[in-house]
Image (cartoon, rainbow, N blue to C red):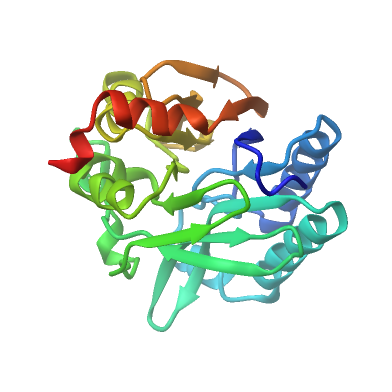
Length: 269
């Protein structure tokens, strides 16, 4: 690995998580290994990588057993075996009386170097039939999280955080050149807002946004938008995967961050 390189081959995994943690792991492993064979140095998965479940009680039970620990351990072993960096966009884990929606950043030695708990809870009413109340089940995080990688400092966020621009400005001012937004955006809000918001966060802060996403119908009443995307500091689509389960990969040049921020020095305001 060239630690001084500005170029990074990064892959986004787009999946359709269901209620069985072990079956989801099988899918994720196949896609991660495929990305590795294609030369990915850094692989990112969406929010809810391990599970999406319609029943709260069964979700809590599933996230309390050894399958969750095995899920994380298996991904760590892959990272170490192939010397790649992996961001598990989020795993749902048991945290005292509630759950946590937690990102795990794993380095190329299989070591977890940072975790991030989703700060902003998705408490919305999109219609009489489509209501979400994450705060009733999840314990929200309190801290911004950044991490150093061989290529650049990166910032962590999850899904609904996307609607809070001050968070991304703070991460950019901390020196993050890449900010991750692993997501499970609903089809309803995705059609209306997803691409616009992701591009806005990139343009506002002059950094790369990497946003792997869930796609498709997970269970009755839950469908996600897909459109995993990498956006450049100038706001152009580096790569996008609109539909289906699979891999989207691109080589990004981090020198674009410095060039964009010099040209438009809005972070100095």
